Each structure stands twice: as structure tokens, then as C-alpha cells.
Image (cartoon, rainbow, N blue to C red; front, side, top):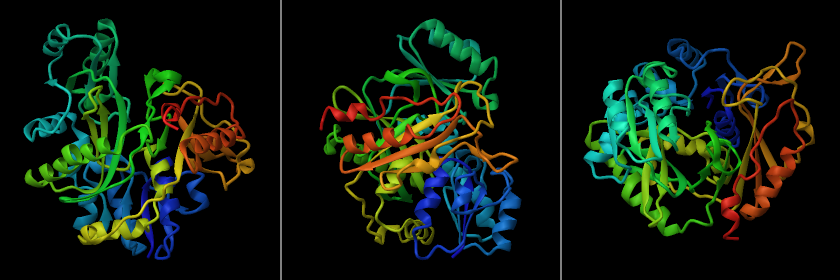
Length: 425
């Protein structure tokens, strides 16, 4: 069948790379795609928020499946548009995507169903939020309620920083309407962990756990980004803790959404914290594949990804066995200088042809093509280099060795991706 993937980042490149391995995948389209995606799929110049144009394209080309990558169109109801036109689509409806679209909804849901998460308070008035904030211990977490491209969360380590973050969100409106409400949350110490799961109602099929690195600099310093690197599996985290996270958080959340009349179908992403007592708690939920978690999880998938998507759409996910390899994967993000603040675009990228494809995969995130056909930077996170190996140590060496071959002006990367996992090997 022909397939349409919506999105333009490293996540979508990894999804298309996995789908292209399916014997049942024929032509793959991506709207709008990027320069790397264009090497394995046909890019279509339609923006992710042009729902009717996307649906018209899918209908005209008679695609057998539409897969939605990014968060914004899901929160805005793109799946409902395709379903209304009887076009098969993989992803949650708008009433289920709210689990990511509103942190207030998510926190209230967890509270109602006794699912472990940090203590919190919610506000839609700046003065009340400020008064509450000034009574809280430091560090404290400030979150914009709505979607903010992964940048709406501040872990404030001083009261001045906390007040500045609150003011930026609620008064300066740096995230627009996404900041009309805020969550002020207890700070949780511990190890972060991401569990993505294929979900169809109460059926949950978990993917291997991964760990993201959000801050832009080594040692988790500097402002948060969309993610500077990931790795999977997590050898330093006991399998019993991962199982407990599934049993106490992910599965109960899927059941809670069904109970609320908002059954979730798609990829449910649990961002978790393992507290010092070894108990997992919920940091956040996303309603789609994570980026860059997808880039380390899908290379470990042995089952046909298209079969998984179709089983979910057809309501047969419970009957499907999903297999994963024991191989390790480490993703190092190559970012533009200045990211996550302002950064230049259009800088030539060199060295991709020198990468050894037997040791690493390269997924394009923010890339484009110049007027002369040259590959250039076109985003904050430019490329994800995914090293593969028998264990984290060897996968990490492969990722960094191959990443060194790629150059562009101002290139920035963290040097400590997956370092936390090495102590256990």
C-alpha cells in the first residue's frame, strides 16, 4: 500500500526508514519532509496544519494509511478530519491527544486515578500563581499548560529564575496561548526514563525503555531543548522498575482514558522519573512517538512497523506479538550553534558520505537543500547520528566516531550522551 507520513523531523525520518523495510509498503509520501527524508520518500509541500489539503492528497493518491508524527496537528484534531473522510489514520483523536495538549488535563487525570506523579497546583491568573510560587521550596518546576515545542518547562534552581519563568509564560506570553495556564510542580530528583507504547484502548504494547538528555550542555546544564540525544536499552535501570512503571503508570493511564470516554489509539509516550527510593513517577505524557527516542527505539524493532500500525487501526493489536532485538542504540544530536535560542540556517553540511552505514544510521531533522542542490542546515536540531552495537559502550563509540565525520559551521553536540549507562557495564 501507499503511505503518507506527516511531519518533517528526525522522528519522521526514523518512522519512514522503518516503514520502508516492510514488504507491504509501496510508495511512501511525507508532508512536508526534509532533505534526508526526500532520499527514501516523496516529499509533498503541504504543511502539517493544512488538514484539508492533506486529506485531499491522501484521498487523491488512495493511500492505505496516514501516520501523524508531530504533536500540534494531533492536539488540533487532524485524526478526526481523516476519520470523517474514512481515510485510515494512525494516531489519537483530538479528545485523546489532550493528554499531551494540556498538562492541566494530564495532571488532573493522574490525580483522579491515583497514578503516581509529582504534587502540583494549576493557575490561570499570574498574581495567584506568583503568590503560591513564593511559598514553594527550590528547586521548583514551572510548566506552560499547552504545547511549546518541548521548551515550555523550566526547572528553576532559584526563586528569581522561577519568577522570571512564570512571568515569561504568563505575562510576556513567550509561548502564546499555550501559557494562558501554568502548572507549578514539585521538583523530583532521580533518573529520567522514557517508555513509549503502542496503545489501542486498553491494549498496551510497550517498546524498550529509553533515556533522553534534555539540557543543551554536558552534565545536564543549560536550557532545555527538544532533546540532545538518547539511548536504549537502559542497563543501569532494573527491569523490575520498568515493569512497575508499566503496571502502575502506563497501563492504568490507558485504562483511565477509556474510562473517561477518550480511548487512546496510537503511541503513548510516558516521560518518567525514578525517584531515589526506586519508585517511578510520571513527569509527562505525550501523544506520539518521542523525538529523539524514536531514533533509538525503532532500529531495535524486529516486527514489521506497518503491521503494528494496521493492527491498531483494525483493532487487532492485542493479537500481535511484537519482537525487539537485544542490540543497543545511542543517538547523538548535532545541533545548530545557538540552539535552543536563535540560530542561523542555510549552512552547508559536509561529511555525510564518509559515515559508515554499517556502524551508524543518520536521521535528518533540520536539513534542507540550497538553490544549488547543496545539503544545508534548516533547524535547531540538524541531524541525529545513531550508533549501533552489542552494548551501550560499543554503540556509543560508533555514534561519536561517525558524528565526528559530519561538519557544519557552529555544530554543537553533547559529549556525555549515554554516559550514565556505562557504570553498569
